[in-house]
Amino acid sequence: MVNTRALLVLGRVSNLSTVWSNCLCAWVLGGTGQGSVFTALLLGSSLMYVGGMYLNDYCDVKFDKEFRPERPIPSGHVSQRAVLLLTLGLLGSGYALVAWVNLQVALLGALLLSLIVAYNIVHKKTGFGVALMAGCRTGVYLMVGAASLGGLNSEVVWAGILMFLYVLGITCLARTESTDGALSKTGLIAILSPLVGILFAGAMNSLWIGVLLSSGALAGWIYFAFSKAKVNGRLIVGKTIGPLLAGICLVDWTILSGMRQFSLTTGGFLVAFFLIAIIAQRRIPAT
Image (cartoon, rainbow, N blue to C red; front, side, top):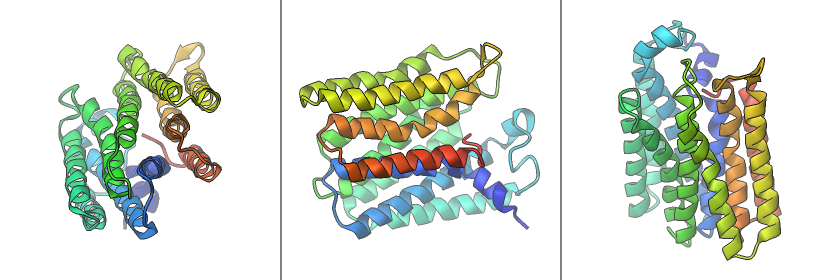
């Protein structure tokens, strides 16, 4: 019998609310649309995310046996064959949920699916894998934006680029979490880069107060993530990953603030998604 907790750990479900945050941000920037369409996109993106995480463990089983034997497959809590079957079901059903919206969404959904599969196949073999992972998050913005009333506009694309940089940074850091690797300077620069882009967008839209407040909150959270990860004065890089992943919701909040698209309702949802991620990570590991 499959252990339910093992499936939750396998799917890194503690990070699911960050995917919802990305969907909401892109949906608002694109001008929103029909609730049924957004629901399908939200569910489809969630299933593809979890499926991608399952595929990650399936592909990494050899590495995990050596470096992370506590993971569900090497620890014997779930079989590799079962994970493969679940992966195919999740990715297939996730894509089916979004493909019906329109042709552009179907094509962008296929692109997202391709990025997910490509990342999991090559990420342990090449440094280019970090760009593929970041591209998966950007793919969510493009897919959701294409389904909105306003379509795939420049604001959605810009938001996708900023999130690409942030997730690129996290992924660069995460590559060293199972080893004794030093802090990735590239990763740190990439994580901080969106703040510059958001401040630029705020300046273009004359929204200094809101942008400074949201950017300050994001910068403060990033600082907290690194401060909390210090043990006896030594930075444990792996401990930064969970908080930084939760910070994805704050990046979305800051993006919307810089593009005249922020509202109390949207902000409330983003804060809720952020808190869900923080609380869920106490039960289910983020990585």
